[in-house]
Length: 477
Image (cartoon, rainbow, N blue to C red; front, side, top):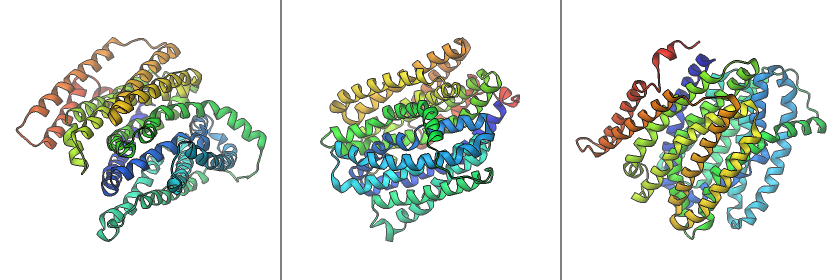
C-alpha cells in the first residue's frame, strides 16, 4: 500500500503542479490584478461565505461515500442513484438558505446575483467531488488525479483568452470569471459521471425517503467534520470584509496572501484524497497504518517546512513580483499566512486518519474549540491589525488543531513519540531556516535565483536529515 500511495501521490502532484499553479498565478491572480483589490476582495468574501454554507449541499456525503466505497465497492450501484437524488434536494435547500443568510450579513441587493452564481458553483463543486469520490473509492487513483486538474485546465483555456486577448481584457468583469468556472465545473462533473457510469449496473431512479434518511444519518458525523473545519478556515475572509470600514480592500490583501497558501495547500488536499480510501481499506483489513502515516507525514513536511521558511524570508519580493498594488504590508500578510502551511499540511494527514478510523466525535470536539479560538482571535485582531490580524489568528488556531489531533491519534492508535523522527524534523527546520536566511541576505545574485537555490538545498537537506529516504522508498512494496 505504501508503494501504491507513493506512485499515485507523485503522479497526482505532478499533474497538479503542471496545471493548478498556472491557474492560480496565471488566471486567478491576473483576475485580481485586472479588477482591483476591492472588487476581488468582495468576490473573495462571497466565496468564503457561500463555502461556509456548502455543508448543506454536501452534508459530508463525499467523505462518507469515499470511505464506504473503498471498503465495499459492490455497494456503488445501490448508493449512487439515492445519493444523487439526495444531493438535488440538498442543493435546493442550500439555495433557499443562502439568501436569508446574505440578508442577515447585510450584503447589498446589488451583489445578490453574484452570490447566486457563486452558490451554484459551490453546488457543482460538491457534485464534482462526489463523482470523484466514487472514482477514487473504486481504486482509480490516477483517473481521479486527471479529473482533479480538468476543471482548472478548462479555466485556463477560457479565462486565458478573456484575460490576455486585449479586446476582451479591456472589458473584463469578475462575473465573466464566475461564469467561466461554472462552465468548467459542469463539464468536469459530466466527464466524471461518464466514467462512473461504466461501473454502474442499470440505475433505478426511485425516491426512497427511508433510505435517504439512513444516508443522512450515517453521513451526519462527516458533515459536522466538514462544517467545523470549513468554519474556522473560511470565517476570516467574511469577518475581514464585514468588520472593517475598508473591508473589501483588506479582504483583497488577505486573498493575495491566501492564494499562495491555497496553491501549496493543494499538496495536502491531494495527499488526503489518496490517503482516505487507503487508510480505510488498510484499517478494514487489519493492516498496520504506522508506516504509511509516517511516510506521508515526513514527505509532506519536507515540502511544507521548506516552502514556509523560504516564502517568509522572500515575502516582500514575492508579493511585489505577483501584485501590481503590492506594498510591504501585503508581503507581511503573505509571509504570516504561509507559516500556517506547516500546521495545515499536518492536519490534512492527521484528520484523514481519524476520519478513516471513524472517530469523528473527538475530532469534532477539537474543531469546536478551534472555532471558538479563531472567532475570538479574529474579533480582536482584525479590528486592530486588519488582514494581518486574521493571519496571526490563523497561525494560532491551526497550530492548536494539529497538536490536539496528534494527541488524539496517539491515544487511538497507541503511537509512541518517535524521538528519532522529532530530531529529524527539528534538524531539518533549523537547517532550512538558516539556509533561507543566509541566501536572503546574500546580494550576489537576483532574488529569484536565491529563492530557487534555497529550495533546491532544502531538498538535499530533506534527504540528509532523513525526511526523505531514497533507499526506503525503493524498498516499498
